[in-house]
Image 1 (cartoon, each protein chain N blue to C red):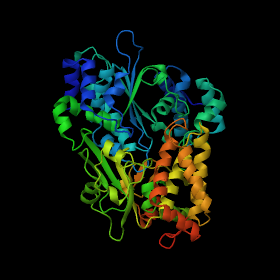
Image 2: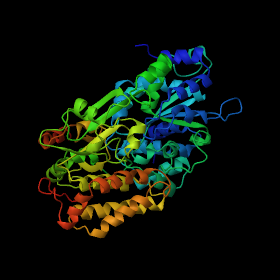
Image 3: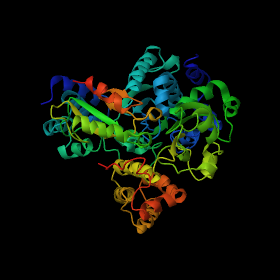
Image 4: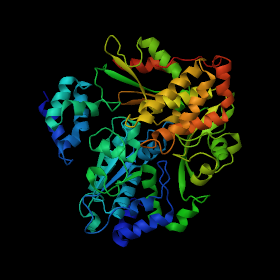
Length: 410
Length: 154
């Protein structure tokens, strides 16, 4: 399998700066959802004899975005690939301590990573003077205790420091002052798992894997009322239709496609007219949404869109850290209105209240991206499914309640 | 009182971080491992041990979904209530659990066997609906399977 070949290559043949340049030129974009250039992110870490030490590398394995199950596949399937990628990344930024920040629920992954870290130490890929290169790296597994906020990189660092997972003000950015005030890089699991292959096979090969301007492959997922839900590694830029029809087998019998969230709970709905849009960062953004985590959730014709969005907003309201007012107060308000609509107690002015929340909880009004992310599926649901919202108000009940009895929210 | 074993485990975690209070979440996990939850007394013990006020430590403990500040049953059921499980009908699973255990979210059965809690997305959306009992994950659930699954836990 050529395990740890990329570690031998970077430690013996490349300088940290060369690894950074390679990854920047690969155009690898962060797979955690934001899609920022991985190489560029690294380039802000101070390097050289005057840089603060120790420096830290953290693998963000907190995967808690509803509808997202791609990192689990990598963590359970081949934790050595992650460790290998982490060594490459740590070398590139000259970090000496690394953490895997794993969500609590991933029990099998925790076992596999613990075993793999041990094996990597035994084989001399972790620890002091790795492969005689003079480069040192220790690695620890940290399991979280459950909070969506831990996926936000500065909140994750607070959690690792034993604090409430509130986001931090930026600047200073974590690259300069991160974990315990030291330079820190947080990369998503899938991002890190790309690195060994870029190092081993080079730029031309990596660019050639993709069907689009965004390079490499992507782990895509489909869940909902489809025949064969699952997760697949495919060239970046396969279309939504290919994923939905060829890989997920199309809709289950008796269910029709109504819409989808392309990349987790915090992405805007896309609908039928978007089925031929390629699943890459640029194309999905041009269509009015975000690639996010690349794991799609399908809305079918027998699921009430208001109930669907209510479920999402319940999640975001619950998981808000409460640190900033618009998010703490706004999201429960949105949730309450959606519940009223779902129960047939909605009023016409409720839609206007939802509309203004999509603006006032949008980018620039809150401390972090949680509330703006929550507003993405709401604003697009109000755009594409507005008639369905209005029917709840005019008919004084949920039009879907015959096929699916309304359930009280606890 | 923290036991010698708990102190030993907490000391190990303190050794990995710059300041003892940085290990407070790990310390809470260690105590919860022993008792199933974190009582006021345990909270005070941990706070003293890592050099924090009880209020500060409680602000951390209550922030996280899986640090339990109230007693739980011998087994904790975490039912995924997020979007893919919603689409795939987790509410039917929830209602069956409500009826067969005669409890609702946040409650513990009279015999102390189960506590039922809702949980954010378990990250197994292609196999929805899903739940966890203690460390065990159950996927592609149907209402019909539930009684047999519950019977495994005494």
